[in-house]
Amino acid sequence: MKAIISEKYGMPETLKLGEVDKPIPKHNEVLVKVYASSINFGNLALLTGKPLPVRFVFGLRKPKYRIPGGDIAGVVEAIGKDVTQIQIGDQVYGDLANNGWGAFAEYVAVDEKTVALMPSNLSFTEIAGVPMAGTTALQAIRNIGKVRTGQEILIHGASGGVGTFAVQIAKALGAEVTAVVSTRNVDLVKSLGADHVIDYKKDDFVNDTKTFDTIFGVNGSQSIFTYKKKLKENGVFIHVGGANNQFYQTMLLGPLLSLFGKKKFITFLQRPNQQDLVFINGLIEEGKVKPIMDRSYSLNDVPEAFQYFEKGHSQGKVIITME
Ligand SMILES: NC(=O)c1ccc[n+]([C@@H]2O[C@H](COP(=O)([O-])OP(=O)(O)OC[C@H]3O[C@@H](n4cnc5c(N)ncnc54)[C@H](OP(=O)(O)O)[C@@H]3O)[C@@H](O)[C@H]2O)c1
Image (cartoon, rainbow, N blue to C red):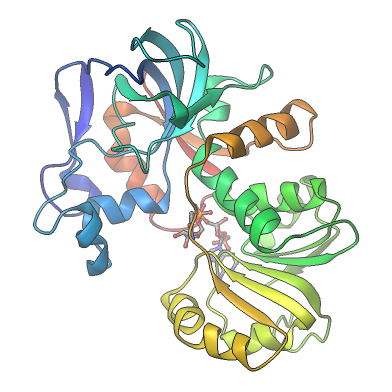
Protein backbone atom coordinates (compact mmCIF):
# COMPACT_ATOMS: atom_id res chain seq x y z
CA MET A 1 0.00 0.00 0.00
CA LYS A 2 1.04 3.63 -0.41
CA ALA A 3 2.07 5.63 2.65
CA ILE A 4 3.97 8.76 3.60
CA ILE A 5 7.22 7.71 5.25
CA SER A 6 9.25 9.69 7.78
CA GLU A 7 12.71 8.09 8.27
CA LYS A 8 14.44 10.97 10.07
CA TYR A 9 13.57 14.14 11.93
CA GLY A 10 13.47 17.17 9.67
CA MET A 11 11.28 19.50 7.75
CA PRO A 12 8.13 18.19 6.08
CA GLU A 13 9.94 18.32 2.69
CA THR A 14 11.93 15.23 3.75
CA LEU A 15 8.75 13.13 3.71
CA LYS A 16 8.48 10.60 0.90
CA LEU A 17 5.59 8.69 -0.60
CA GLY A 18 6.55 4.98 -0.54
CA GLU A 19 5.27 1.40 -0.58
CA VAL A 20 4.87 -0.50 2.72
CA ASP A 21 3.12 -3.75 3.68
CA LYS A 22 -0.62 -3.54 4.24
CA PRO A 23 -1.19 -4.01 7.99
CA ILE A 24 -2.88 -7.13 9.36
CA PRO A 25 -5.33 -6.42 12.21
CA LYS A 26 -4.65 -8.06 15.59
CA HIS A 27 -7.50 -9.72 17.51
CA ASN A 28 -8.73 -6.40 19.00
CA GLU A 29 -8.13 -4.33 15.86
CA VAL A 30 -10.02 -3.21 12.77
CA LEU A 31 -8.43 -2.71 9.34
CA VAL A 32 -9.56 0.65 7.96
CA LYS A 33 -9.25 1.69 4.33
CA VAL A 34 -8.44 5.35 4.85
CA TYR A 35 -10.20 7.85 2.61
CA ALA A 36 -9.12 11.07 4.29
CA SER A 37 -6.97 12.49 7.08
CA SER A 38 -6.06 15.95 8.33
CA ILE A 39 -3.08 17.88 9.66
CA ASN A 40 -2.57 18.96 13.26
CA PHE A 41 0.33 20.58 15.11
CA GLY A 42 1.05 17.25 16.84
CA ASN A 43 2.04 15.92 13.41
CA LEU A 44 4.67 18.64 13.06
CA ALA A 45 6.25 17.69 16.40
CA LEU A 46 6.33 14.07 15.26
CA LEU A 47 8.09 15.03 12.02
CA THR A 48 10.56 17.58 13.32
CA GLY A 49 11.28 16.19 16.80
CA LYS A 50 10.76 19.71 18.17
CA PRO A 51 10.47 20.96 20.80
CA LEU A 52 13.20 18.53 21.92
CA PRO A 53 11.30 17.04 24.93
CA VAL A 54 8.85 15.41 22.46
CA ARG A 55 11.70 13.03 21.48
CA PHE A 56 11.24 11.20 24.77
CA VAL A 57 7.87 10.15 23.37
CA PHE A 58 8.46 10.07 19.60
CA GLY A 59 12.02 8.60 19.53
CA LEU A 60 15.35 10.06 20.64
CA ARG A 61 17.33 9.99 17.37
CA LYS A 62 14.69 9.26 14.72
CA PRO A 63 10.89 8.99 14.66
CA LYS A 64 9.79 5.65 16.09
CA TYR A 65 6.52 6.00 14.18
CA ARG A 66 7.49 5.75 10.48
CA ILE A 67 4.12 6.78 9.10
CA PRO A 68 2.84 10.10 10.46
CA GLY A 69 -0.75 11.34 10.60
CA GLY A 70 -3.29 11.14 13.43
CA ASP A 71 -6.81 11.71 12.08
CA ILE A 72 -8.53 9.10 9.92
CA ALA A 73 -11.86 8.68 8.18
CA GLY A 74 -12.53 5.51 6.23
CA VAL A 75 -14.28 2.16 5.85
CA VAL A 76 -13.63 -1.01 7.87
CA GLU A 77 -12.40 -3.82 5.59
CA ALA A 78 -11.56 -6.51 8.15
CA ILE A 79 -11.89 -7.09 11.90
CA GLY A 80 -9.96 -9.14 14.48
CA LYS A 81 -11.70 -12.02 16.26
CA ASP A 82 -12.22 -10.09 19.53
CA VAL A 83 -13.79 -7.00 17.94
CA THR A 84 -17.34 -6.46 19.19
CA GLN A 85 -18.39 -2.85 18.50
CA ILE A 86 -17.47 -2.43 14.83
CA GLN A 87 -18.48 -4.39 11.73
CA ILE A 88 -16.99 -4.81 8.27
CA GLY A 89 -18.31 -2.02 6.06
CA ASP A 90 -18.76 0.50 8.89
CA GLN A 91 -17.72 4.07 8.10
CA VAL A 92 -15.51 5.18 10.98
CA TYR A 93 -13.27 8.02 12.06
CA GLY A 94 -10.75 8.51 14.85
CA ASP A 95 -7.52 9.94 16.24
CA LEU A 96 -4.51 7.59 16.22
CA ALA A 97 -2.18 9.84 18.26
CA ASN A 98 -2.13 7.32 21.14
CA ASN A 99 -2.37 4.33 18.84
CA GLY A 100 0.82 4.38 16.78
CA TRP A 101 -0.13 7.19 14.33
CA GLY A 102 0.04 5.98 10.68
CA ALA A 103 -2.92 7.88 9.20
CA PHE A 104 -1.13 9.10 6.05
CA ALA A 105 -1.53 5.72 4.39
CA GLU A 106 -4.08 3.78 2.37
CA TYR A 107 -4.77 1.38 5.24
CA VAL A 108 -4.32 1.33 9.00
CA ALA A 109 -5.01 -1.35 11.63
CA VAL A 110 -6.16 0.11 14.97
CA ASP A 111 -7.77 -0.89 18.24
CA GLU A 112 -11.54 -0.75 17.75
CA LYS A 113 -11.79 1.60 20.76
CA THR A 114 -9.85 4.22 18.77
CA VAL A 115 -12.63 4.79 16.26
CA ALA A 116 -16.29 5.78 16.29
CA LEU A 117 -19.00 5.49 13.67
CA MET A 118 -19.16 8.52 11.39
CA PRO A 119 -22.18 10.80 11.57
CA SER A 120 -24.61 10.16 8.73
CA ASN A 121 -24.52 13.66 7.27
CA LEU A 122 -20.81 14.22 6.48
CA SER A 123 -18.38 13.00 3.82
CA PHE A 124 -14.99 11.41 4.61
CA THR A 125 -13.16 14.65 3.77
CA GLU A 126 -15.43 16.69 6.06
CA ILE A 127 -15.25 14.35 9.06
CA ALA A 128 -11.47 13.80 8.73
CA GLY A 129 -10.91 17.25 10.19
CA VAL A 130 -12.81 16.49 13.38
CA PRO A 131 -10.95 13.95 15.56
CA MET A 132 -8.04 15.82 17.13
CA ALA A 133 -9.19 19.42 16.67
CA GLY A 134 -12.81 18.74 17.63
CA THR A 135 -11.97 16.73 20.75
CA THR A 136 -9.38 19.32 21.80
CA ALA A 137 -12.07 22.00 21.77
CA LEU A 138 -14.64 19.74 23.44
CA GLN A 139 -12.42 18.45 26.23
CA ALA A 140 -11.02 21.86 27.10
CA ILE A 141 -14.31 23.76 27.00
CA ARG A 142 -16.65 21.14 28.50
CA ASN A 143 -14.36 19.14 30.84
CA ILE A 144 -11.86 21.78 32.00
CA GLY A 145 -13.78 25.04 31.55
CA LYS A 146 -17.10 23.42 32.57
CA VAL A 147 -18.69 26.00 30.30
CA ARG A 148 -22.47 26.15 30.63
CA THR A 149 -25.48 28.21 29.65
CA GLY A 150 -25.10 31.93 30.14
CA GLN A 151 -21.35 31.93 30.74
CA GLU A 152 -19.14 34.29 28.79
CA ILE A 153 -16.19 32.71 26.98
CA LEU A 154 -13.37 34.37 25.06
CA ILE A 155 -11.79 32.24 22.35
CA HIS A 156 -8.44 33.72 21.43
CA GLY A 157 -7.55 32.38 17.98
CA ALA A 158 -10.99 31.25 16.81
CA SER A 159 -10.39 30.81 13.07
CA GLY A 160 -8.11 27.74 12.76
CA GLY A 161 -8.71 24.01 13.14
CA VAL A 162 -9.31 24.02 16.91
CA GLY A 163 -10.79 27.53 17.11
CA THR A 164 -13.61 26.95 14.60
CA PHE A 165 -14.75 23.91 16.62
CA ALA A 166 -14.37 25.85 19.87
CA VAL A 167 -16.76 28.60 18.77
CA GLN A 168 -19.43 26.11 17.74
CA ILE A 169 -19.06 23.81 20.77
CA ALA A 170 -19.15 26.74 23.21
CA LYS A 171 -22.33 27.98 21.52
CA ALA A 172 -23.83 24.47 21.61
CA LEU A 173 -23.14 24.38 25.38
CA GLY A 174 -25.04 27.66 25.76
CA ALA A 175 -22.19 30.14 26.22
CA GLU A 176 -21.97 33.71 24.98
CA VAL A 177 -18.92 33.64 22.71
CA THR A 178 -16.41 36.39 21.99
CA ALA A 179 -13.94 35.40 19.26
CA VAL A 180 -10.54 37.01 18.70
CA VAL A 181 -9.50 36.80 15.03
CA SER A 182 -7.83 38.80 12.27
CA THR A 183 -9.87 41.00 9.92
CA ARG A 184 -10.13 38.36 7.18
CA ASN A 185 -11.74 35.87 9.62
CA VAL A 186 -14.42 38.12 11.16
CA ASP A 187 -17.21 36.93 8.84
CA LEU A 188 -16.17 33.29 9.25
CA VAL A 189 -16.53 33.27 13.05
CA LYS A 190 -19.77 35.27 12.90
CA SER A 191 -21.14 32.61 10.54
CA LEU A 192 -20.20 29.96 13.14
CA GLY A 193 -22.26 31.75 15.80
CA ALA A 194 -19.80 34.04 17.62
CA ASP A 195 -21.82 36.69 19.47
CA HIS A 196 -18.99 39.25 19.55
CA VAL A 197 -15.80 39.51 17.53
CA ILE A 198 -12.55 41.25 18.43
CA ASP A 199 -10.40 41.96 15.38
CA TYR A 200 -6.85 41.76 16.77
CA LYS A 201 -5.57 43.75 13.77
CA LYS A 202 -7.77 46.77 14.62
CA ASP A 203 -9.25 46.54 18.13
CA ASP A 204 -7.43 47.21 21.40
CA PHE A 205 -7.74 43.73 22.89
CA VAL A 206 -5.31 44.36 25.78
CA ASN A 207 -6.98 47.51 27.18
CA ASP A 208 -10.59 46.47 26.63
CA THR A 209 -12.13 46.12 30.11
CA LYS A 210 -14.70 43.35 29.46
CA THR A 211 -14.11 40.18 31.55
CA PHE A 212 -14.93 36.50 30.97
CA ASP A 213 -15.78 33.31 32.89
CA THR A 214 -13.52 31.26 30.63
CA ILE A 215 -10.70 32.21 28.29
CA PHE A 216 -9.68 29.57 25.78
CA GLY A 217 -6.16 30.38 24.54
CA VAL A 218 -5.76 28.71 21.16
CA ASN A 219 -3.51 31.09 19.25
CA GLY A 220 -1.80 34.41 19.84
CA SER A 221 1.01 35.54 22.11
CA GLN A 222 -0.53 37.40 25.04
CA SER A 223 0.99 37.57 28.49
CA ILE A 224 -0.65 35.47 31.21
CA PHE A 225 -1.17 38.76 33.12
CA THR A 226 -3.27 40.13 30.25
CA TYR A 227 -5.45 37.05 30.46
CA LYS A 228 -5.60 37.37 34.28
CA LYS A 229 -6.93 40.91 33.89
CA LYS A 230 -9.62 39.66 31.54
CA LEU A 231 -10.93 36.89 33.80
CA LYS A 232 -13.90 37.33 36.13
CA GLU A 233 -13.29 36.65 39.83
CA ASN A 234 -13.65 32.84 39.56
CA GLY A 235 -12.63 32.66 35.91
CA VAL A 236 -10.50 29.99 34.23
CA PHE A 237 -7.80 30.45 31.58
CA ILE A 238 -7.19 27.29 29.56
CA HIS A 239 -3.97 27.23 27.58
CA VAL A 240 -4.24 25.16 24.41
CA GLY A 241 -1.66 26.58 22.01
CA GLY A 242 -0.19 29.68 20.37
CA ALA A 243 3.21 31.24 20.87
CA ASN A 244 5.76 29.64 23.21
CA ASN A 245 5.48 32.43 25.81
CA GLN A 246 1.84 31.49 26.42
CA PHE A 247 2.81 27.87 27.02
CA TYR A 248 5.79 28.52 29.31
CA GLN A 249 4.02 31.25 31.33
CA THR A 250 0.96 29.08 31.90
CA MET A 251 3.04 26.02 32.76
CA LEU A 252 5.42 27.83 35.13
CA LEU A 253 3.35 30.71 36.55
CA GLY A 254 -0.13 29.23 36.16
CA PRO A 255 0.03 26.92 39.21
CA LEU A 256 1.34 29.78 41.38
CA LEU A 257 -1.28 32.28 40.24
CA SER A 258 -3.97 29.62 40.71
CA LEU A 259 -2.75 28.87 44.24
CA PHE A 260 -2.87 32.48 45.44
CA GLY A 261 -6.18 33.57 43.94
CA LYS A 262 -9.60 32.49 42.75
CA LYS A 263 -8.69 32.68 39.08
CA LYS A 264 -7.35 29.42 37.61
CA PHE A 265 -4.70 28.97 34.89
CA ILE A 266 -4.54 25.51 33.34
CA THR A 267 -2.25 23.96 30.73
CA PHE A 268 -4.37 21.57 28.71
CA LEU A 269 -3.37 18.47 26.72
CA GLN A 270 -5.90 16.66 24.53
CA ARG A 271 -6.28 12.87 24.75
CA PRO A 272 -7.97 10.78 22.03
CA ASN A 273 -11.31 9.52 23.33
CA GLN A 274 -13.95 7.44 21.57
CA GLN A 275 -16.83 8.74 23.74
CA ASP A 276 -15.93 12.32 22.84
CA LEU A 277 -16.15 11.44 19.14
CA VAL A 278 -19.62 10.00 19.80
CA PHE A 279 -20.60 13.22 21.63
CA ILE A 280 -19.41 15.36 18.72
CA ASN A 281 -21.32 13.08 16.30
CA GLY A 282 -24.47 14.09 18.15
CA LEU A 283 -23.68 17.79 17.77
CA ILE A 284 -22.93 17.31 14.06
CA GLU A 285 -26.12 15.37 13.41
CA GLU A 286 -28.15 18.02 15.28
CA GLY A 287 -26.58 20.65 12.98
CA LYS A 288 -24.85 22.42 15.90
CA VAL A 289 -21.30 21.74 14.70
CA LYS A 290 -19.90 21.57 11.17
CA PRO A 291 -16.23 21.10 10.29
CA ILE A 292 -14.67 24.02 8.40
CA MET A 293 -12.34 22.90 5.63
CA ASP A 294 -9.67 25.30 4.39
CA ARG A 295 -8.24 23.19 1.55
CA SER A 296 -7.32 19.61 0.70
CA TYR A 297 -4.20 17.91 -0.68
CA SER A 298 -3.60 14.42 -2.08
CA LEU A 299 -1.45 11.90 -0.18
CA ASN A 300 1.38 12.60 -2.62
CA ASP A 301 1.25 16.29 -1.68
CA VAL A 302 1.52 15.88 2.11
CA PRO A 303 4.85 17.83 2.20
CA GLU A 304 3.16 20.82 0.46
CA ALA A 305 0.21 20.51 2.83
CA PHE A 306 2.59 20.81 5.81
CA GLN A 307 4.36 23.79 4.23
CA TYR A 308 1.01 25.56 4.00
CA PHE A 309 -0.18 24.47 7.47
CA GLU A 310 2.98 25.42 9.36
CA LYS A 311 2.61 29.07 8.29
CA GLY A 312 -0.24 29.13 10.84
CA HIS A 313 -2.92 30.96 8.84
CA SER A 314 -5.30 28.13 7.93
CA GLN A 315 -9.01 28.93 8.07
CA GLY A 316 -10.35 25.70 9.57
CA LYS A 317 -8.75 22.38 8.68
CA VAL A 318 -6.19 21.23 6.10
CA ILE A 319 -7.34 17.85 4.75
CA ILE A 320 -5.44 14.99 3.11
CA THR A 321 -7.33 12.74 0.69
CA MET A 322 -6.10 9.28 -0.28
CA GLU A 323 -7.68 9.03 -3.73
N1 LIG B 1 -3.08 21.35 23.97
C1 LIG B 1 -3.46 20.45 23.06
O1 LIG B 1 -3.74 19.29 23.39
C2 LIG B 1 -3.55 20.89 21.63
C3 LIG B 1 -4.22 20.09 20.67
C4 LIG B 1 -4.31 20.57 19.36
C5 LIG B 1 -3.72 21.79 19.02
N2 LIG B 1 -3.04 22.49 19.96
C6 LIG B 1 -2.44 23.79 19.67
O2 LIG B 1 -3.48 24.70 19.36
C7 LIG B 1 -3.00 25.70 18.48
C8 LIG B 1 -3.96 25.84 17.34
O3 LIG B 1 -4.00 24.66 16.57
P1 LIG B 1 -4.80 24.68 15.20
O4 LIG B 1 -4.63 23.34 14.59
O5 LIG B 1 -6.17 25.22 15.40
O6 LIG B 1 -3.94 25.75 14.39
P2 LIG B 1 -4.23 26.44 13.03
O7 LIG B 1 -5.40 25.81 12.36
O8 LIG B 1 -2.96 26.47 12.27
O9 LIG B 1 -4.59 27.95 13.45
C9 LIG B 1 -4.45 28.90 12.48
C10 LIG B 1 -5.40 30.06 12.74
O10 LIG B 1 -4.95 30.85 13.83
C11 LIG B 1 -5.09 32.23 13.48
N3 LIG B 1 -4.09 33.03 14.17
C12 LIG B 1 -2.77 33.11 13.90
N4 LIG B 1 -2.16 33.99 14.74
C13 LIG B 1 -3.14 34.47 15.55
C14 LIG B 1 -3.15 35.42 16.62
N5 LIG B 1 -2.04 36.05 17.00
N6 LIG B 1 -4.31 35.68 17.24
C15 LIG B 1 -5.45 35.05 16.87
N7 LIG B 1 -5.50 34.15 15.84
C16 LIG B 1 -4.36 33.86 15.20
C17 LIG B 1 -4.87 32.23 11.97
O11 LIG B 1 -5.51 33.32 11.32
P3 LIG B 1 -4.73 34.72 11.10
O12 LIG B 1 -3.29 34.38 10.81
O13 LIG B 1 -5.42 35.38 9.98
O14 LIG B 1 -4.92 35.43 12.39
C18 LIG B 1 -5.50 30.93 11.53
O15 LIG B 1 -6.86 31.07 11.15
C19 LIG B 1 -1.58 25.27 18.07
O16 LIG B 1 -0.65 26.04 18.82
C20 LIG B 1 -1.51 23.80 18.47
O17 LIG B 1 -0.20 23.41 18.79
C21 LIG B 1 -2.94 22.06 21.25
